[in-house]
Image 1 (cartoon, rainbow, N blue to C red):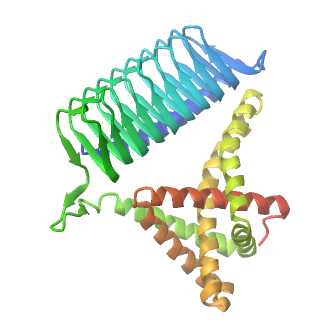
Image 2: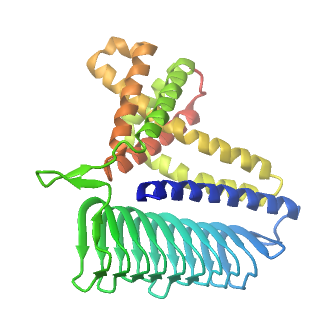
Image 3: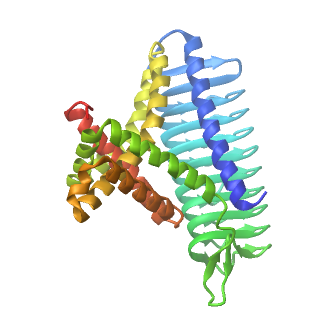
Length: 386
């Protein structure tokens, strides 16, 4: 399987794993049918352990699988099966017998993983004593791999530093790659991203370095190879967002106009509030799950939360389109067709920007956060009537 296809498969599997984790966790709490005795929920089903709360510390060994979620999660005990954990800050110091699936603002792995590991977050570090016996898939703004990985490494994000042995290939789609003096890559290093690779003279790459996804033109400039891959799916997704924008403008024209005005007048507050909402909503849903009787509402909340993200993104595009219309032709800003066309243009431009390393990630994140914050401000002040 080619590198870009493997990365897509990795993302799909990671998302599916997290969805299965949340569903299993909710079912476990329903089976318990009793409130927690302390400040966190702790449920055992056979050899598996389900635990959630604000501050969690798993010190005792777990014979089977571990499912954990919280604001601050510490896993020091050995896990016999798989470990799936999510938290604002997550540290896994105990050995994991099978696979590790983790997500968090900061994720630190210090133990041994008996199979593959898939990790996503803001800052991710595999410490010097960490060991992954299978493949490692990781996505984050900052990635530090200081331990050993026996299989392949697939990394996506901002900055990747490798300062330990890797038994297979490394596929990196990152802004920057750094190879420390202890880096020992047995296979190839395939790189696609920003300014290049910083390599310590002592670093070793047995299979050589290959620029992944680019060919070098006659002017010695990188030219995308197979650039059409994934473009069709992206345009289909964008077309769906265009339809959503048209529906929102037809059903709630006044409300969308007010959302746009809020985003234009208070962009900083909108982005900040969007970030708070994005982080706090999952925590609130977990707390709702802890009440046990609130599990159905929590599951409904998850569905609404996921549905609101594209709405926020589209609302930001509508706001930018309205702003452009008012600047170029104020009279057109009052007509649905012109507003829908402007939003479609903005969505198409955003999709194109998404294909540019770093720029697309930043613009997409700002659009979602700004849209979320502006929607929250408007819903707080007045009803969503058109």
